[in-house]
Image (cartoon, rainbow, N blue to C red; front, top):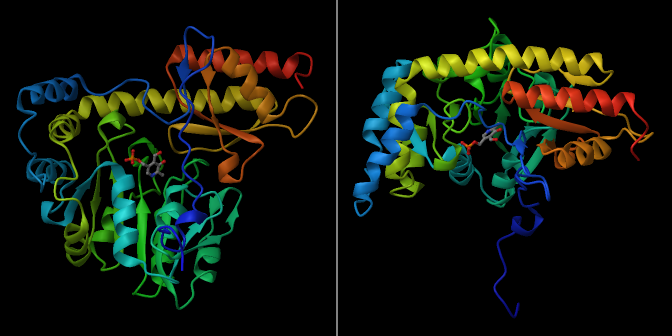
Length: 368
Ligand SMILES: Cc1ncc(COP(=O)(O)O)c(C=O)c1O
């Protein structure tokens, strides 16, 4: 008999999620490039809508987020009845795990997949199963090879964080075709708006025509509303029904609802943000590569930079040097990438400062 309460199996195996750093001791001006936030900020209309909620803080929000689901439905041509909103897509990923995983069942994610997947899986008592990647990219055959009788969910970020790589729609369809119908395929398209590839599809088409696919989206990235915690999922009616039974009755707050409606209708702001990203993602990838550092080709709003493993030019050395200049990138050791740093595409100023700093770092004496 235990002398104190003990959490359910799996909980104590969780490595708590460590968010990107947001400060650099002793540095006056910092450039936070560690959490894939947008350098352009939210739509001014979203900020205005957020302010308008201040006079109604005593009222509960609409627990069904009806107007927001309608606005999302209009923006994407989707049935609002098949949309669920959440306090960030993290909320929805956890709800999906809770609804579809039980003790000793399995959820698959890929080697460098988003860390919330194993955390959400372990929290239910189920087992995370890792499918190998090829060239830092999800490998459909490896995922299908990892399926067992106990598999209930496949979590796939497309594009993936922290690698930035993506699978073309043909590959997603091949993955879906190979999965048993009882397995829920969760397509996490947090970075979909940034992708500029003809062979990419965020998942809407697949969800619409199938019974075992869900797509998750977020307002934290291109919409610039990370602080408000707002995400949404689109799924088959039966999955939506299950999630609506277990979600918090008011899981999305009134400020997030108001700002989300304004943000999704400001298509000009989204386009400007995507155009900024396209320009600087290409520039950063090219300039950093020219310095002799490997950059994984990215379809998202960040780049994964691979450093040498010795001679004073390691990822840890680079991180120290950049942090001292107020340039905060993301260490990705927790993702199994101890020799890399992830950099979010920032403002022109931030991007140029990082490249100049890395140029000095690579050319100068070893930093060790
Ligand atoms: C792949 C992926 N999915 C989901 C999220 C979580 O987003 P949210 O802020 O909506 O919880 C992130 C955030 O970094 C992400 O990278």
